Image 1: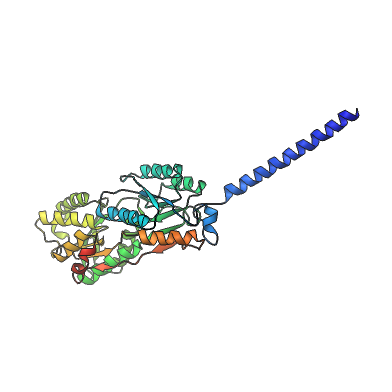
Image 2 (image 1 turned 120 degrees about the horizontal axis):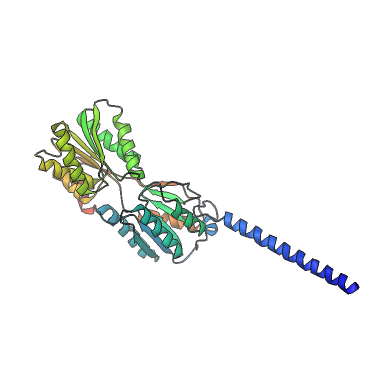
Length: 343
């Protein structure tokens, strides 16, 4: 009986120890799962996120597309800056497909890159990608466009331009040039993109102060030169000589609209004022030729600013939720001066 009793006590003790260890392990797992989100900011943030504080990094750059001068210039900026700083960069191209961009980000997570730089194609729909990165403790920086989520939780920060302000500047220039009276065609960017929403809002806010500034047609042309021309041709057929101004959400669509106006026997820059956003080389050439009137810069060369921000993050510094680059305005007074440095 004594042996049996001792055996029972020893067994009870072992079970208790195992239960305590199991409880401790479960507690540790819960704490680990709850911490280390991709966008943690503040002191020690880089350690919490699991990023190396020194040495070479592997950067994932999940580009939305590489089919126009602005996007190509942006991708090159990130490639060049990564090489300059001794980091490896893995570039993917979603080819204008939001679902493919989600898959591309998830692939980068599977590859265990150290950081993801993400220019979102659309504002909504990236939650699965951001969640995958967060669970893998890979910090994400949103580049040039915003996405649904919270800085410090779903991503570290947004780095880019103030798109609302760009639209406002285009609208204010047009008001001043026309004396507050114009029939405007608006060529919108990709539906669902934050930049489209913001440039539309900024322009609308500016011209709302002048009741004779009227948008008589507004359609999407997906930031494409070819679509800009096609959409503008259709609007010209419907509204013809009523049109006195074009506001395009980017230079590619504006240049397409110029081609449509010329084909219709109208004089862009004179009969119809053309205002736009981006500041690409072809737009500055069009301004110097008198066929475009103004473009508000949206600088694609965000690589240096993004990598500077990344280094601050690695040092554990607190990162602002929105980091805004300062853009210029180009018109007939300065376009020729900057055309050689444009992308």
